[in-house]
Image (cartoon, rainbow, N blue to C red; front, side, top):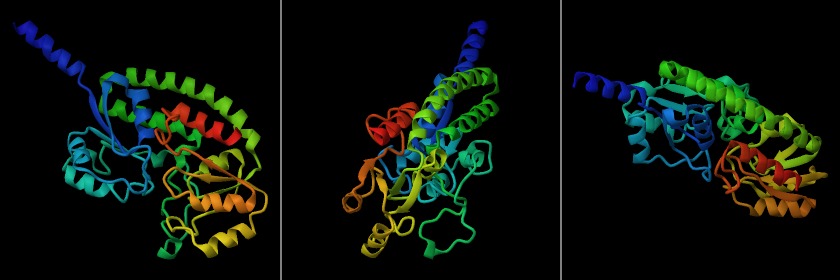
Length: 290
């Protein structure tokens, strides 16, 4: 009987899953790639939501209360919904500064860091542009960061996490070579975007951002701003439109400039075709070159 009890205890320890909460679906995809069946995953936001304005729900609090690890995008992107969830979770393990809190923005080079911050600048993130996951070259260091944190929290399974990481990186780097070759065909094209959402993608592949439909980040388009933008935006090929902002402005500007509105997914699940991180970039590329 004692042997049976010890055996059952061993099984319960060996197969206990780390409880991980991710703020966004793309983070959840990396957790699944690295953690696989050794983690229990909960994702707060939906791929169809505006990442700046996710609605905090009691169900999120319940999952965070039991979590071993909270993984966030950071750079103040979650500032509108995460602080109350963290406070109400009453879980000391996942508070900022603790081992159970992982801010992925610390593992990439953020662009567009403002020198000074004021309300006159709109909804500017003081740490820099937070949409860094849309550069596919940023994904490998983020996957490594997740693997290392899983190792710290669950050292007996570290070899398993690192093996999954290497398998993922091998597949990712193969596709990255293909994406780089295809995206290179877009170098030099002029684009306008609604919000400063695709800057990392544009910078990586040499596309030229002429302006944004928002006069300032988070501020809806105005007639005066749009007319000024149109007057200096000759040669623009694409108006890059996300899925969650209104589309009438993009259509109006495209008509005036003889450009094409391209609706791009920003997140896993934003459109049906973007089922995971691989298909997210496949779909972004397909929509730009079709």
